[in-house]
Length: 284
Length: 209
Image (cartoon, rainbow over all chains, first blue to last red):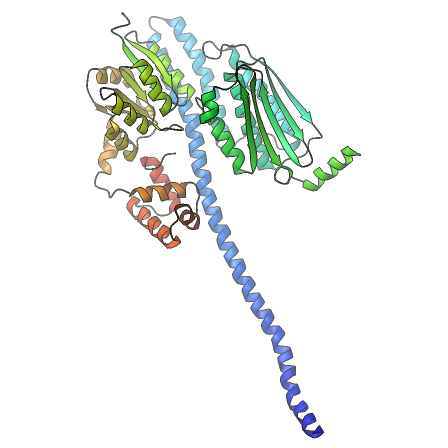
């Protein structure tokens, strides 16, 4: 038995040795092939994704350009035509209309600039409070216009709670756009005495609230979600949802309106750990 | 000029600067009077009911109920209504839809130098009017095979950045079917790729912006 066993042992050993050598190589090769395939697929998917993103971005820009720049300019052209007709017999009236046209042109340029992504926000995330503070001065001059924006400008202030934490650039831009639209609505439509922006840098959530003490939203607007011009409430909500934010609107007749935008810290902050650390540091 | 003999106008547009501009222009014409403004299709129907204007100036692309649906709703209830479309887009598909819905005139916002007030007078007098640019864009595509409703739906989803897989999911169809739709769309529009198809469709007003 023993010689046979040793004989078999001697016969089997090279095969086992061979298998021992070849098997890991095979496993490695297969693993490598699988990985290459999965990487290829990932690459393909990411390429497709980029392509789809590009189409979506193009559509968005086209829509925003149409909503802002083009419509603004077309409106201005009608006004200039009115000026042309008034000029011979009612030159003072024509001059008034020209003033409005100039301002409408500036407003349209500003909106168009935002539409193509050249946002007014500066490079640093911590500048968000400043960027939002600038909104007030952006809308105030309109109150001096004759005609449509004749109401006195409301007071405007920005409150910051917590230490400013850098936001991800894209989140910062979106927050600015949404806040800007809300502030604009308050300035233009609310007949408010005070417009307030509150920014809360909290550990788990980033929050921006825009509130006024004005006439409140028309119930129809609250219900249907849109009002005259721009992208209004549904636009804001859609925008917020797109990057994972949440938008709440609260409004009461003659008591005011508050729009609250909440974003989870994981989505909002550029450096989550630092945010956590600062949160803990503040608590201690 | 007494108020009775002036042409009473309702203006529908969702952009305040545009409404302001048209209001200023109409304000210079003593024989015309802007009696109401609306910024959506639903509001347009409501304001029409409230003021029964002689002429309605109607934008087509608005949130909520769009202009074409509003034209249809107004003309169903008030068949005598005279509606002038004032659109930013000259696409043949959009213009045809508006005219079929019952609009009497189609003007492009960008090409109305001096024409708006004249067109209001013309249409008030019972005439129909289509701008040359709009008419020629309709003529250019009159022999084309029209996209089916399903294909328009698919095109809309492409414009929203959806992949074939997501389109299939959205419409509860097989991915291969979605691919076939896309192939037909590209062929019918003579488009090179998906982006091109979206650009063409937007230009022709096949899908709204």
